[in-house]
Length: 177
Image (cartoon, rainbow, N blue to C red; front, side, top):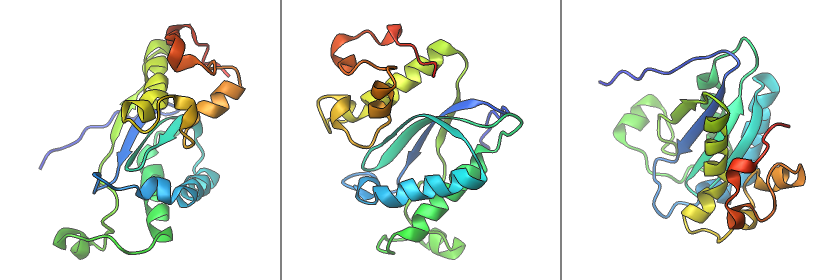
């Protein structure tokens, strides 16, 4: 069995991709967006983290979050977010024998992709990746048209220009807030 090595950095800023088990044709995350938002809100109350950027697509999500100083336990946060979300939605998914024996739902992939943000350039690249993702997947023709994204909030704060994807000046953005 492979042994996954994760980089744990207290107070670190991380990029994550979290994916549903059944991806193709599955719109579970956008169909149950309120339940996902509640799961994230609930976890943040007891295990705080700062959201820099977030996008929810029908079958996966991407985010850049920052942990509090002295805290590196993002695994607990993802366990709780996935668990809280799963408890809020109906039991309609098929489950494998392995998942049944472990008492697991058949909603999420067990693992997720994590990347420790290393510098400002890396941060910008991942923030841009998050916000262009709905366009990349053909869901909309501009990030401003996707409702499940922090793009709108960041435009309001003046971090992204409203025409960002049209102008190609992502490298000029000031991400500090």
